[in-house]
Amino acid sequence: MPKNFKAIVIDNKDEKFTREVKDLNSDHLKDGNVLVRIDFSSLNFKDALILNNGGRIVKKYPFVPGIDFSGIVEESEDEKFKKDDKVILTGFRVGEIYYGGFSQYAKVNSDFLVKLPKDLTNKKAMMMGTAGLTALLCSFAVKAKEELLMGSKVKDVLVTGATGGVGSFAVMALSKMGYDVHAVTGKKDKHDYLKKLGAKNILDRKEFMGESKLLEKGMWDCVVDNVGGEGLTKILAQTKPGGIVALPGNAGGVKIATNTMPFVIRGVKLWGIDSSGTSARRKDFVWNEVGKLIDFTMIESSIKEASLNELLSEFPKMLKGELTGRILVNPNK
Ligand SMILES: NC(=O)c1ccc[n+]([C@@H]2O[C@H](COP(=O)([O-])OP(=O)(O)OC[C@H]3O[C@@H](n4cnc5c(N)ncnc54)[C@H](OP(=O)(O)O)[C@@H]3O)[C@@H](O)[C@H]2O)c1
Image 1: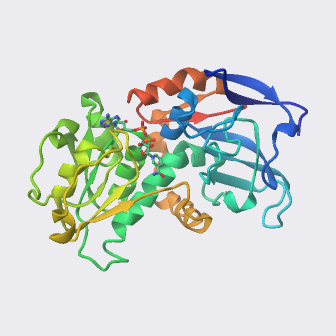
Image 2: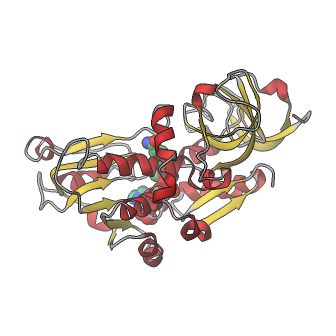
Image 3: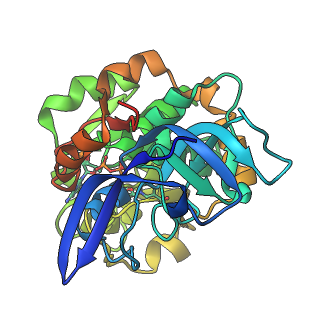
């Protein structure tokens, strides 16, 4: 390991929030038992909130954010991992309470790490990042209606926030699973992009705003809702009997107003998705399914690679809902 390495450091001294790329050394890496040389990280919604003002998530400053990374093991005190192993980290509060991935090096608990599957590269893993992993967790929640719950065949699946990181990967994975994907977006100029990813039909996000009846005509076998808030009321009322609504996000608000009818009359299931705390075993399963469900050549053009410095000017766009696709963070650029 070199004497110094680069990382984004956020600070909050005298109520003045700052973010800058700084030189750190090994004394700054106190947690964990595996030292990883980071190849790539990615920008996720939570990262954007943290880079903005700590997002009421980071409590101790100075701090290195970045909730995911892929890299190569440099030193390990756990025999499960050896030098030069390629590894992926997502969640487990790294980048929230433990120093994270917007850095050339990180030291983490070995229980948080997953080995990179043979058919992936470190770059591809972070083209997906937490958003991609979350999209696949949602897609397998949808599939659970057919398999785990022995329900009827899934046909129509609604995906909201479809042009976002989670949404784009969900559209692609669900269409690869053979479902008819109905993509909801607020971006009129991105309909072709969504069709290319596999969406069968595009809906305007405005259609889900406004008053909802207790129950509406059942339209969706399952839903992946990245937006939450007001639209979720209508979505639950429009979900068919036995349907699963996978809810990973709250880009449109944290409060929901609903009623018991979709649940007690139609048996609709609201399935919360928390990728961060999902077990390493489940994460390992999902990463190993990526090769079957994600076509990287198709998404390459929607991935923008950013250095640590460039990330500092890109992240505000995510908070304004202006980003399409993903920001791949290269700390060595
Ligand atoms: N639970 C988990 O484990 C987990 C993991 C990752 C992300 N998340 C959450 O999932 C959500 C999506 O994450 P992401 O990485 O995909 O973010 P993103 O790339 O910023 O995408 C969010 C998308 O939601 C739509 N949107 C944004 N603001 C909206 C608003 N006010 N009303 C309605 N739609 C709005 C936009 O899509 P359109 O323009 O196409 O409508 C936007 O592209 C976020 O809330 C994030 O915190 C959760």
